[in-house]
Image (cartoon, rainbow, N blue to C red; front, top):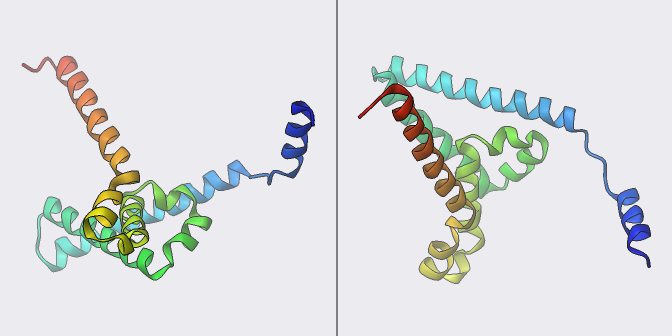
Length: 147
């Protein structure tokens, strides 16, 4: 079969995605995660009498815990199919990637299974996050006239 005809055939059977709808859903769900995070910060600040920075740490721990729990129970993947990047981009997505890799490779053992494979996806996020923070910090240092 000719390559052009094959590509046309593949494109005719490829499912169409509604990018605007997906973007709106991701925006709303991501915003909802942000609102939940802010409510948790307010809750921890008020009821535990913590500073905002300490309450923020507790909020992150809570979101990571629930994302990992829901991943282990099998709910998170179903929610991500609906919410798209609204659940993957925040810290919940990072927790999901770590937990799902740990669950998937647990049968291979602690070191060669979980330890070796848990950071496959999350490791790239960490590396690019650290590199981006370094670059933007350096740019800020130059602009602000630091050292």
